[in-house]
Amino acid sequence: MEGMSNGGMLYHEVQEAKLCAVHCVNTVLQGPFFSEFDLAALASDLDTKERQVMQGTVSAAASGDFLSAESHNVSLDGDFSIQVLQKALEVWDLQVIASDSPVAEHAQIDPDLENAFICHLHDHWFCIRKVNGEWYNFDSLYAAPQHLSKFYLAAYLDSLKNSGWSIFLVRGNFPKEFPIASSEASNGYGQWLSPEDAERITKSCNKTQSPQRISSTQQEDQDLNAAIAASLM
Figure 1 (cartoon, helix red, strand yellow):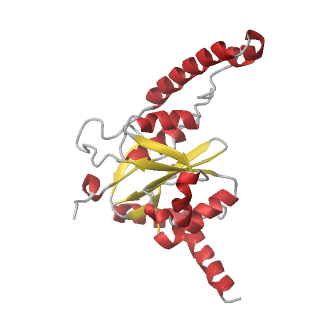
Figure 2 (spheres, helix red, strand yellow):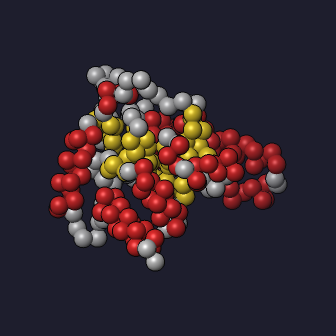
Figure 3 (cartoon, helix red, strand yellow):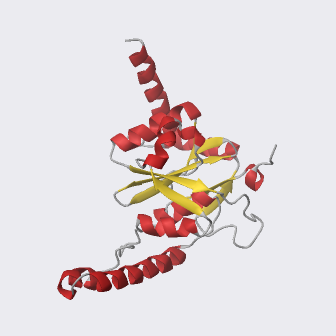
């Protein structure tokens, strides 16, 4: 049996400004592999290539608005496009696939067969990732990754879709290790947590959170109760 990646530790980043796309990519990879400057460079490269394509395929009048506009891949407040996230993960030979794609059909039936999902709505990105056989919600709005049971995973993804979230699968050979002891093991908003520490932090936050903020654990209990009630009807 293979040893646990990163010594069994979980890598989580807490929201900084509007850098949730950076946090999302890094938690997919489980380490501080990218900075906002790295993603901005990818966005700039994509913008350049897109403008070159537009110049070569449409008239100047038709492409004028596109060519004169601000970046189509990063907003002024730091939000990045899905194309930027795709390019970042392609560096590690990972493929981003829309969940409604025909090749993602098996994931809709049994999402536990996958290793990572990227979720997007409006200007927020986060990932749901399997680490050492267990699923976690690495939403940067949470103080720590929140554990998701395999049973609840499908229901949670369905609830996100029904709420308008776009879901993407990430497939490929994920990095096995990040040198935690290295000088780059933290980027200022990332932290390494044991599953036990993550659970402790989550429970502590649940005790003090506002009524409007429902944790995944509380939501799971509600959804499970609803599923049981529906099965008895």
